Image (cartoon, rainbow, N blue to C red; front, side):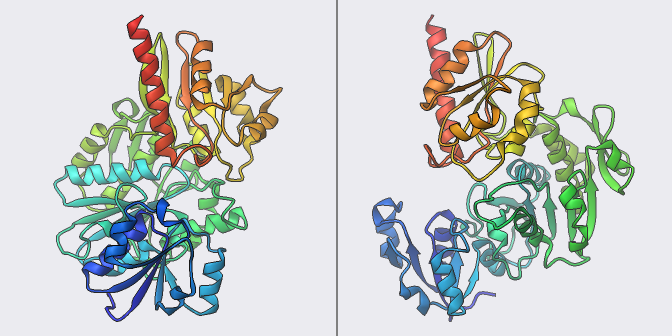
Length: 454
């Protein structure tokens, strides 16, 4: 329930923080906005100052007069302001938690987390449910923030949320009716003390569930298999792995180029518009989630067949002189790159590099040798990647992003595939992975125009 008497401190004025601030205001509450960035770097700062008490360029002691803080997922929990708040025993929550506290009781929540595949799976679930005629919104780490919707009003049947570990670190009562954990692979190791801490943060999604709720789990993932004791809700398992099929009570698996589900439901791989084994796993998890939401099998199969790939996720862009280009800018860790490489039978030239998140790139060496003709490196991690792979696979380093793409194209043969799959965050040269992917698309479109003119 929303407490009008509280004064909320909003730490971080990105999308989720601003959405929470306006939700508090619309419900008659009071909040103070604070961001370390200078005013010149805050979009719409003038209007924010007109609506709220704000400070820019610092987190001052004014925050200590607030009763509760809503902390942006971009702020590490080791930041000095967080330590100061804890010393003063100030309650801290995420925008995810606040949204759950104020949402109407009649809305069911389906939450998706994991290291990879969250956006595709959450979007697929929302697509299926919307196609079935239910009122459904898609929010969280994809699209608009949770609090950006009229979630306090009745009439929204389902809220599908893409959820990050950072958001789950500061939950209190958040309890999804259906929670999905897709996989856990090394990621964000610059934010957590250990891989185990990162993995356990993902399991927070199940923390408040009980036997009235549902958990959809990937039994191919060793970390998930080893922590099922942390799940107290009804479990629904899926797997691509034939061996696991023998040791777990599965409700979804693969057999003879098709997905197979409990109770005689099937869907051939070639009827899906999304590519690769990772997307087969995503589709299986989405089907199980929608079954938990009591969507009919006919509506579910119709929905997964009509779903198209998301932008920046193995997105086909164009074919230029017999060379195909794919934008996989969302591949910000090594496991995502593995999925991309396994999705193609054609020779691959892969463009990689960006800002470092602390991963061991050598884990890709064997697969790169097997699947790629050459790796093209650009960005801050170029030297680290070159050290990992030089002598094992052909490597070129080109700092300029456009020049790197053009080199890959000029060296490519007809029938090759050029994939932007960076294995890194984008903040060395771009605002986010979308900005990087859009830049890639624009460069490819220029190549298309140049060849059409010829």
